[in-house]
Length: 123
Image (tube, rainbow, N blue to C red; front, side, top):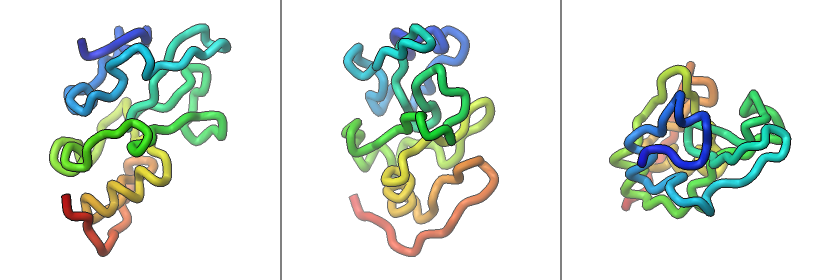
């Protein structure tokens, strides 16, 4: 399945690259949000909980690649270099830095710009 346990996926299903990275594909990846009475799993382009409407909100949980154990080769080769509306990057700072090293540029916070990074990680 390309979605699991979250009603938002009925409207906006997970992208294939998310599924292939094994993000939000198991019940224990999801956390209950009592405010929205729903389950949520942060992904690279979706923050949690569902009751938070802006990923810049300090209460937002952003995707953390280290915690999710997504392989570096998957991030380097399979992930899109930009996301299109209605999505935007929702990445923890360590994940943004990691992608910057893998891609040679940091994913934009708001989709409007990128910052060049000099070094690249070899995987």
